[in-house]
Length: 528
Image (cartoon, rainbow, N blue to C red; front, side, top):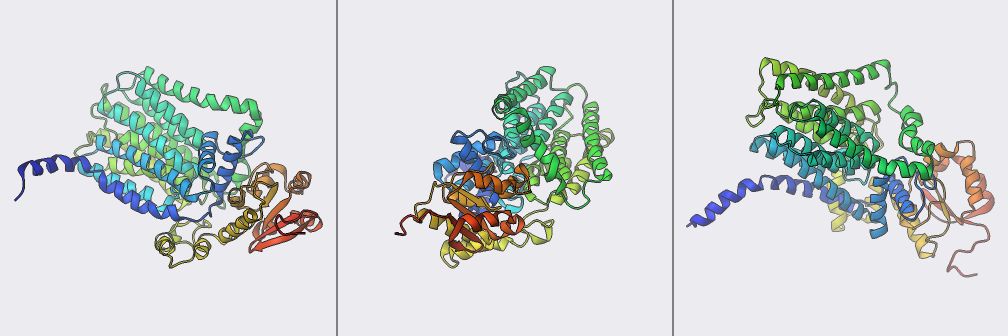
């Protein structure tokens, strides 16, 4: 026998828990990321640069990286607080992913019907929870999605619902957009899209755009100016812009940057702006029939253009576009809760935006996805599968798979880095002067070694200092006590061999890593 009061309480409670399946799905899908071994070298590169920055070294001059300071400081702070813990780094990305999912849920419930909002939020949980776009890794794209989603949610929901009084919401959106750019400079695409929406929407006034733009610009200048003074404007400019425009851009997929490529990018921009203006003309003065579809379309095109322009086979490039694209596609589908009157004129106005989303999306396919080999676009992670990610994690957690074998499934350098770092710690060599001649920067963190070279991954040192022996010359001047090499890096950059052979001796090896100690230095604790 049911109690009437209980039934009434459930009837009121259940509609409020529409988001719960998405939250549970996101959590369950992300749990294996907390068991990952240390394997993704970019995480270590960012974290080591951030650690050095928080120790007082000036980024971009004393310690180099090509990411803005908020990302370096965030991951560096995690390392300072929790040590070289992959679990701590992935708890960070879990939190940022959850915040982004909450932003998508907030936007969906204010734009779509309840059923569509619940469905879209559940799909968003899948996109963020699965490792397809590497949102589990502590890289800029995994963090910027949180402020970017909320900046877009504030602007789009406010304008869609006609609650545009005051300018505080525009200031908040501008500050969030600035934070997004301070995680990754390519997030200028998100900031620009929201600026275009504020310029075009009839419910937005000049004061709203001005408040948004002023907040975003001033917050950005608050870090650009000090770092330009400390590191020098040319040095900062190279790190933020020049590095991407140079050798990195030339390493794109073969024959990707053709005249047709740039023409299609330009066409997408024209279609996005033209579609926004056409939607504005269809909305009238109040925008009451304008809906949110065109705003989501503009945001989606802007984010898709980043991986479309880069043509790099890295799935994380597409991570910031996942939620905007999902929301835009959902918005263009029929929904009684979406206030977009699909009259002939409105459909004609939407056509350019739909075309831009399709073209940019097809171009962005170059990024591929991870953990599904047939969709990997040739990235180096294509040999791993979702079975490795989920079943392997369960086997490692239950002890059916040894930790070394678990590391090996991710990267053959991972177990070697663990062994080398353990040996260095056991022999009291943590904190000693060292150079890691490897593309994998994890030994710097795992063994708590200072970064003496301009940056941690050796391939970036070769770009910064030169590829004609300049890096080895710098190492020789630094006189490190320890040199750790990796076979693949030595094969690519063999210039270190003469120095190692003439002034160092090998004291430990765990293939493909080797530890060399400077001649005349004794291994601590090894006796006379």
